[in-house]
Length: 463
Image (cartoon, rainbow, N blue to C red):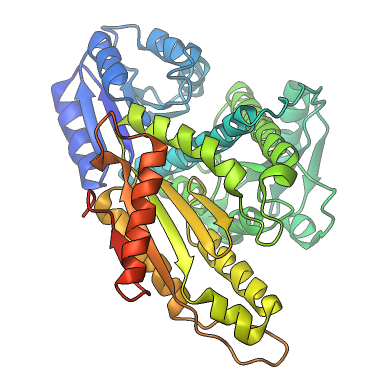
């Protein structure tokens, strides 16, 4: 389902123009003129992101930003301040009030959409990590004790870098951290997993002069195991929004014009470091608290013990947001014959390979679990009946179009699966409990099996 965006602007023309652009980009959009209207809309239909005109002197929009950040119910909503004067001082004031990004007037459409995509990716990651932490608490695991983080590990990267020493010096004084000045090749060639950084500050101020290698650097850092979780702040050329947009879409976490003063760069750096440490803490909770108890040792997927409390949280989230939750039951066809004919070792290889195919072709927010034997469960929040059907067909095709390699000089084996699908939005408030949804998905799976296997069946309520 597309992200939901709220536009807050007292000027009707601005609201209309922005709404048209957002609708064209396939977002769901609400728009209003006043702070009171905005609060009502947020309460009734919580947005994923807010576009707020902070050039408007009619209302104290900076105060609204602070109020949204202080409230636990709205603290995770992304905010882009628009219409702000194009000065480092004005941008700093908006960021300090709680905005995630500031785009001056006139806005560049490509940069605006890149910013929105970047912030929605961050929001999705935050929600997924927090959801899994909540599930670990529901299972009775102790919350990770707060630890002293110490000084941040920061590296300034640039090609040719005549200004990198000045940038590093400013960051060193403001953040009171040791700053490493490195060449990109030094980072990319390193295979030492113990040498990690919290933040890369990439000096791309001269990217318009043909240093296209910096674009590749951002995507390479995001793809490598040693650096993929490190935050990236890219210093970009002034008045070149297309370059800033490109960096964001390649995986940069934030961009800042090279004409920005030290206070703005420092504020952005501090926020990225804080986000990195929050993500690290949440990942540690999941990794250390849950893995042994709730992970299937063969496939590495979550097991039945994890499924029940996590599905309950997904169902509650679905109820509050009004967005559907799709649940699929997936069963390997004729799996007993695989074990009987080729042996249990071959059967285990099929289970492991199927788990990998499912995991690699679903979103981070989706739940994939092995329920036991040859049965798997997939839960997809924010997924309509139509999208659930398409996703189920796609997953089924991922299995039956590519044979499974059994190794040991055995021929590849063709495997098929049957899929049963149910969607929470098809049930009324009294019957939308998660066990009802799973029961409906089970019945749909039985129908797929009875109809000849290797197919998808929707629950009667979702058909």
